[in-house]
Amino acid sequence: MVKAVVCGAAGGIGQPLSLLLKLNPIITELSLYDVVNAVGVAADLSHIPTPAQVTGFLPADNGAEKALKGADIVVIPAGVPRKPGMTRDDLFVNAGICATLAQAIANACPKAFILVISNPVNSTVPVFAETLKKAGVFDPKKLLGVSHLDIIRASTFVASVLGKPTEALHYTIPVVGGHSGATILPLLSQAKPAIPDILNDKEKRDALVNRIQFGGDEVVKAKDGAGSATLSMAQAGAEFANYVLEAAFGGKKGKVVQAYINLGADAGGEGIKKEIGTDLDYFSVNIELGPSGIEKILPIGQIDDVEKGLLEAAVKELGPSIEKGNSFTPAPPKL
Ligand SMILES: NC(=O)c1ccc[n+]([C@@H]2O[C@H](COP(=O)([O-])OP(=O)(O)OC[C@H]3O[C@@H](n4cnc5c(N)ncnc54)[C@H](O)[C@@H]3O)[C@@H](O)[C@H]2O)c1
Ligand SMILES: O=C(O)C[C@H](O)C(=O)O
Image 1 (cartoon, rainbow, N blue to C red):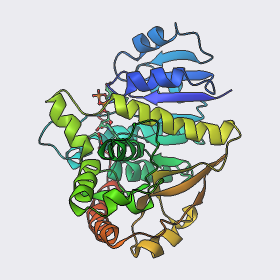
Image 2 (cartoon, rainbow, N blue to C red):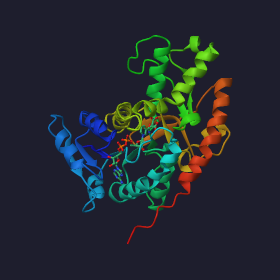
Image 3 (cartoon, rainbow, N blue to C red):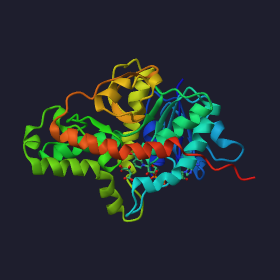
């Protein structure tokens, strides 16, 4: 029996993500939580004949904890998306929602895998960690900031520049760092198969890196006030959740992916700190997944001079975002 929960399930990401999780045969129970319409979305999905039994919950009567009770994996796309002109940092208003959900997880399912989609990921993952630490249930191996949309974008955009079919992750390009502008660091020099035609063409390479770093803005601009990426994010979130589920419950350990994770002493991230030459608490890195979540943190590996410059810029921008999340204090509850 595997129970998955989506928090923010009625939203632009939440609905298609819930649909894709309903189609995942590993999941036997799917619980949907939102402050609006979660019961309706659950009723709708429940008519699809797949193993997962779907239930919806609203905040009344401690609905969040009821939804989360006994969950194995919680995926969180709750919170406000960007409008044109906004940075992801402007979405720090979502910190309060994240702290509230983290506390509910600590109470109802402290051993669950937690997949954070809510922006700004560079800060909201620290908010989750700090809340879970205060509750005494923080497991750095199970808290994963979802940066997988950057990975699917990198693969798609490389294929399109090279005029190749954009079939499922044909190009594997590790993307490390964070999830926002200059913090997004695509390692084109490590692409598999290799892409010398791009690496040897400065103009093409710069344009490609820029498109991967600012792919989110492309969607925000095209939606013109109606939000940000939802469908591609739902696909990326469901694919990433499936990697975690397959490693934990499907006997497929050893999958290497990138996620934005805590590099604290308990997490075994000291090697990465040495490799990138900083003391950052969080970074998106290569990880190997297994039954308990992150089994290994793998080195970033060899990068070229262009990437060394991008790494410096990423590290500089990440520090303050992490600090903002680390020092967030939720407002006291209204009496
Ligand atoms: N990590 C990524 O790569 C990535 C990609 C795209 C979007 N995002 C982020 O995901 C978030 C959601 O985006 P969206 O387009 O689905 O927004 P949306 O407004 O369409 O949906 C958000 C949902 O969250 C719900 N919500 C609000 N407060 C809540 C709470 N306390 N508990 C539970 N649910 C709550 C809302 O009712 C709404 O249904 C945004 O912060 C966005 O920036 C992240
Ligand atoms: O761009 C955004 O605000 C949403 C998301 O982080 C994205 O990368 O599409």
